[in-house]
Image (cartoon, rainbow, N blue to C red; front, side, top):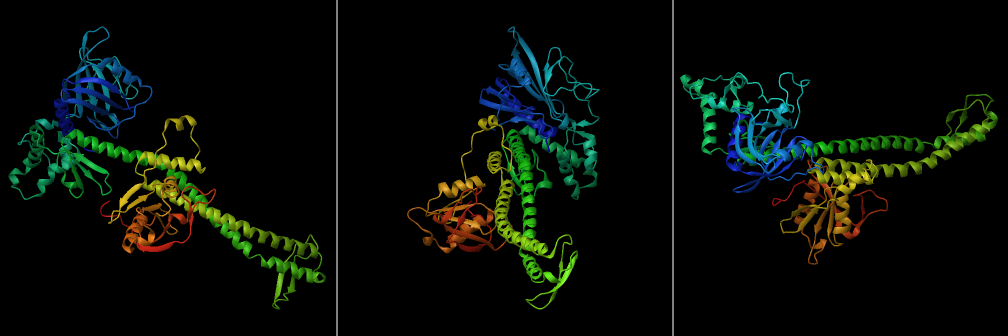
Length: 571
């Protein structure tokens, strides 16, 4: 993460131009380590976001929406008391450090003007936000209090004189000149210059690989750093986010980072916009991943149990189907009671069906007739078990198909509301314990929003994102004449072709059917496969059995095509 001294410099300069002399209208604390200021400026209202979270410490203007707790935290109430209604007089970077100071003039409870300083320290796990009284230099409070038990050299507690983090024996990047000789390795540059991230250090060294005059080689890293700082002063820099193939942000900076040149680049008009995009999208991905892990673990554990149960039922069924020998033993013992000696552990008798000799195990404690009855009972019990085991195996197979679809839906979920809907589904089916009624009341039930595509002729295709949405899409939203699609015997989403103006399945060309089937294959477990079978049938032939789990249906009159998973080009 490249929120280094250079990015801090650019952010501080932008914020100074944007919110200096702005009035702090509202103060919120969305999370334990987050602050949100609503500020009225000459150019309009803006929102300033600050975070001292170890994984996403930052300060920037934001357009994002944040949910505030019902009861404001103590630090939020303190800031409202000291800063709300105050006017920002100055914003600056502390030297070349990842520290931004915001000076604020406000009125105290007596109506006198007082000067406060909000200090945002962006230092990984040591990040913090501290409110200081400028006149006395004392800390009013910190969002994360640091006692002597945590840090012997620097405490951040109310009433303590504020001290900056210990200065490092480095050249501030603002003091580097073209004549400053810098090392030709990443560690050397970071050890020599303050405020430089590893990614920027590597970028400074990039030109050293080219055949320059040896006498100028020592100047190259410094010259590259000067180009970057001068671009901030002149406003010619272009903040950018580097994106992975799946669209998730990998890195961001105000400077070009050649090592990420193979990734997609998204440029922004300001560092605030860039940082806000990077962190909001990265945090959203992390939150989805965090929320999905418990659900995925639960679903996979239930799936593992179902697969183990299938194995055991299959073994029991196989044993039951091999029970004809018990009937034979009983018949032979009944016909040859006079040949069985009392107390014998086995007896050899002629099988009158094929003339072979069979050795029959016996319970020496009972007589021959009782042994025969014991074998008849075992045979009868085994025959009964065949029907029971087959029924259990069918039910268990349905559970496996359902749980495989749930696992796929969780893995494909890309937002928290969708995960919450999947959790509701698992609560309904009994795989997850129901939450307290109070928490259920607070959360509004999400309206189904299936994914929508258009085929080459403009026909709409809707795709369910989870099993509850599949049920709604197929059983409630779709018309009887619409076409339903699903991968054959493979977990996947319900896909509906919306046929309007009296169109029927017979009116569709083979090309359109293949195009829609490719979408169904894409939204299935077989996304990475070729030649995927997809069933399709008019919705009127789809039925949902009583008691069936969400997303589970039966159908008739289906046809099957084999396609390669693909989304429409106009997606």
